[in-house]
Image (cartoon, rainbow, N blue to C red):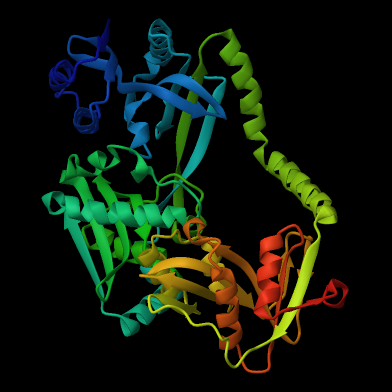
Length: 501
């Protein structure tokens, strides 16, 4: 039995080609990984047990600093981890223990302090003290058929709404049809969509798009259009008559129209039309997976910390990670205690004012006062301004709150919100419930526009915009002297907070 260690792509390709008569090897996947590594100029290793052109164990690995269970490690890992929800590792059960020992010895000889084998669909009888199982949701055509998704009444109703309201179209791009322009559109939507949930998109990584442009032969790019806009996109792959849901992206402008459900609807129809056997929704615990799947498979991860010190500290962190729900509960409790303690020291000033018929504010011709009461309006305004759109914006708009802002050449200068509903005031850890007016809150001025009186001008424009004879309430921390001065100059009067809390 020969232990093979190769780190040249040309040598690895030559060795893999010599194994092409062995049908149980993931040769196609290995070659795809090699193409990606070549395009990205990543260092990879082919580590295998081979005898007479028969591979008993083998996989493609790479090295880098990885953060695992809260700590950074110099890590040897399966190269596909960065790009797929599954990894291609071939292991003959009889050699599983010897192979993992070989991998650990190789990693230590290279100065690594961690070996990890992640996202394996097969349990190859590998052994590790730190083994994780994760369910991968899927729709098995042999159980209910793909109509399990597209026949759902709620999904059909959402689709009918879109068809009536917009020019609704679906296009599928395959192979060489998936060009750089389409990938750029996917990347831009992906960045915006994950910023919506305060998560950094993987497309900010240098060379990330190289993966999406490599080996598109088995890839599928689905785009759903609403008029001339992209409603949603999905970049996936077809492997062994399975569609793998790899990179779904929604246009948050249409968040209220269930764009993710539409992607699943159209993907299920594609699976049926193309006689696929399975729609695999991949790793992750997104809520939609419980609704749209009828089966699951397991993914296995094996961690091997190298050296006594790394083993001891990883053992401790691994135990903590297994009790994450308890830790989250403790963290939430401590957060509430902290908020309560801070609220005791915070002092707020409260004000109210009657609406104005004429604010007396004259804005220069380049400055515009605007009101957003729909989420698409807000999205367009923030996109034009180059500002981030976050989930709380959507939640507030759907709660019938309004956003007011001043802008210059589409660049937002400052903004603030109004609500007629009870408002939780985090500074006092209490809920403010006004029966006879609106509450103005959460004002913000971008740094380059501060100290120019725009906050005061915005408040006056809002008082003019509100319904006649209504009352507006506003508050500020007592320590925020500038805000309190601007509020008083606008015409608000100080009131006793005990009358409204």
